[in-house]
Length: 405
Image 1 (cartoon, one colour):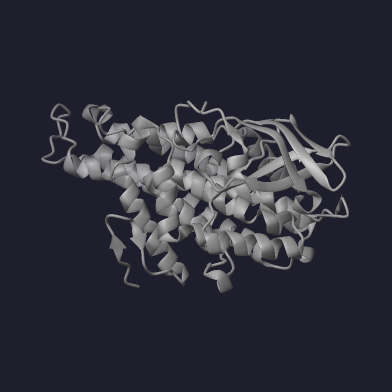
Image 2: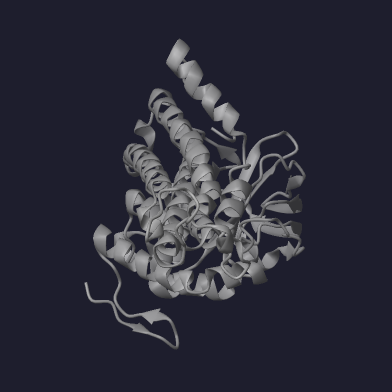
């Protein structure tokens, strides 16, 4: 595929059609993001331009229906998320979350809601975000007859300030959960995201005040009643697997960045009694890169396998998914996630061992890889992932569905 891009408007004039073409487009976007990734991380400004780049490149519509120009392929979307994360973990997270929430209507909605929302988002190139933190219980949904009213607040509302559509999760007084997709402009943003990593994700607090919608906007509800099925819970597994691909991408980006620095800048150590002419001849440097590469090849292989497994369920008939299938996929996602957290953090930390002291200069921003992976991997404790895998290995027990499994 030949891709042409206008350097002034950042617009791409060819829509990818095959998985390989989507990945080529993702790598081009990643290349552009990498040019000033360290500077943008330091500034921490809302990523309006970066989201526009995702739209202009067509990556936003990848999961949309083919008849509206989308690619409709989860394995490709997860790989694209990983490629973008190599250059910028914040933008990779926003893109991955966009894919999750643009699919929300398929997780929970009726056929009519699916058709309406997917055509709207693909044709208009809408960007999605979510304010659904299950540990925040203060978004109240009130039944007002033909309408519902939403009031409350949500933290960790990643991307809401730079999105077109935001997914909200609240509860009726009787405890029933309600999921809606609203115009992002209907929320109030507190601009209070000030964390050490993932600085461009706009993951702060939002307030919802008196937002009214028809009952028909409640995703999956018919005559004020929802009809749950196992497929709904795949949303939780998809979120976990997006995180897993995000971490793989960040770690791969750290490895590539470190290797380039070592090849071009690192000096050999002259006091070891085994002097080398080049840092790339140092045995400890070669050994460390061998360890890094071996670990990330291993995690990549496991993650790719699980990507295919989950994609098969996501693209299959919703009514056909069983709790057994769901559980078997969940335990392997837990295995992949806890593995890349441990190995990825090790790469992002030990990369300085093979770059040297000068690599810690602020102008390089090499610490952003560790900060990004460390920050986001605290989303839920990795120890619980290991426990889930352990119970499966020892007792044959599948993980119980929860908001984090």
